[in-house]
Image 1 (cartoon, rainbow, N blue to C red):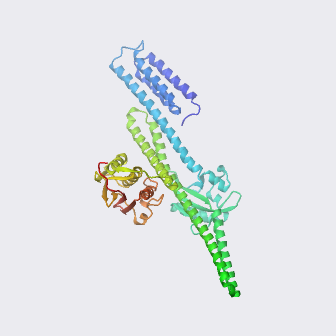
Image 2: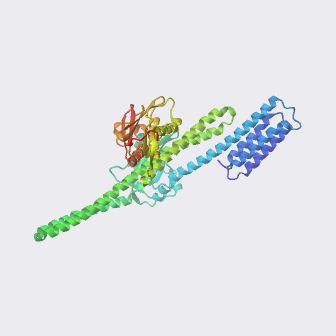
Length: 522
């Protein structure tokens, strides 16, 4: 949006200001010349520095005010005063709006750079294809994996990267996938191979995600080179064969040398122990690598989806705001400004979840125990969440005023925000959210019950896994980290979390933490 060379725009804006001032001097009783000042201010939207907008805005405002007192001006009456006052207000509003839009665009550019960095620096190859199987986007890691330059891949069919002997089978599989698209891993139960530019082949693991827009269907492929893993599996098989060979040799020796049974048995046990230990180490490393790759794939898939929606909202709303330039269009501008704010808040919530998850994984979360009045803490949380509540939603509370616990206030507040925001998100407008707090036997139990969409039985055992989202929640914004983070917080506080839900009947989430009886006046 911003021009690299601002001089032409600055000179043109100065010319517009000068021409407007001259015409206004000639005909001071006509306030419609003030529109020239507004045009000059609007032109500064293409200049990155807000200073030019303020300079032209203040200049236009000054000329508008003093035009009433030009020597050739008629005796000002109430109507002329009102016209010029209205022009001054419009100039101030235009200057404010342009400064706000420029700041909004700068924020959008920063968010876009972050998303591009996620794509450009991903450690997996990422390829985007359209409904015809043509490659329309690749990241640097994909270029490195396949040995092609970006321009050599764009526009080519995906079969370029598949061994020729598998082309016909892949074309059929691709057609079937577009008929019944879904997010899944490819090649389960069989080996997959990709083809480099030099015609060499290498084993890969591929995860597919899809999305659609007005232009058609698109498929995102996340590609991992698993050559090292295959080599590890090969070594494991070789060690198993060696184990079998050693076992056979020992049996022969036992038959031939009965007098050395004990000695040979000891040697055999030591060899078996060493080989089994090596096998366990290799299997453990392989399982850890598979788990890490799965988490990475789920993270990239989730992040690309969750970041794309708010960024698209911000871009479309910012574009529409720039079209509403009249004073009577303020309600439309306010509607799109609210959409932008909501999208930015969602992005901030995503980043907060990622930061909390990262700190927990690195073991950097420490507890700070202090007396906390629970009713005040809950009131703070509810005040923060009220702007995000849907129309007609209310909190029904059953909370004693006197409960005070020694706990970590920050972790408890984050826990309540996660649970209550989930209840808000997954409940329809007009529904109540019931909050109950009970202290018994040295523990505090907080229960949050909603009347929302609930969770299917088959999904409930995975709810506390990182990045997991229930099947009926894919169209609702979220990262799949909230309950995972809450469970980790409960572990740090010596507490626990329980979950009860029925599909379309609502959900009850209860957390319990240690809470010795303390005077309510603390």
